[in-house]
Length: 274
Image (cartoon, rainbow, N blue to C red; front, side, top):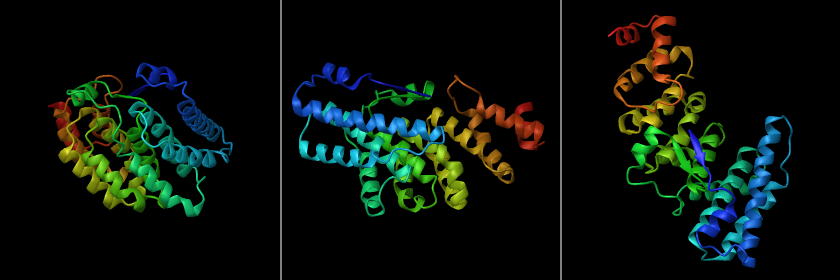
């Protein structure tokens, strides 16, 4: 999977007819870029074991206030700065940079961005195209918010707070790219609430028709503990009939081969031999 970026925000916005040189617009874009850059820097530092980012939350607050004070703004501009706000809010929540009194409002704002009206619409045959090659456009507040909600769902203290939004997006969102972002959280949810995770998985298998999302689900299920392998096997065997993206590893066949050869599980042996 990969993300298709629109390039530098101002170039993209200029092509969309936004006057990026207007003082109010330029100031708003400066704030958005500051939040994006600080979020990226924080994530890179975290990968290197460094603790930074103490200035990110104030920047997010300033961006949020500036968007609110701007009132009615051009749709592309709203899409761009709301994407940055989703990045900043989610990064701060995931990295525990939000002061305790502000956590509930910040989470509410992030969830609201997952419903943002101005995300790039998918084409009429978007489900088919995504199933063939999972990719999505940027900026997209809804996708960024979904990605961060998935990360929060992996945390025991946040799971009860995001569960309703997580499940609603995963089961009903019209954009396969949004649903795709949520699947990798499932093995972590299993550690927090295994009963809930199995219920979610069974519902996804009953309703999801996009091969790329289902392939990601197989990857997630492959990470579950060994004691769950019989249950995983029973759930994924029917997916042999589903067309999945050809690029990348054939995760389904690989997992069934593991079950058949390494675990000597009869249903997988029968499927592969047949």
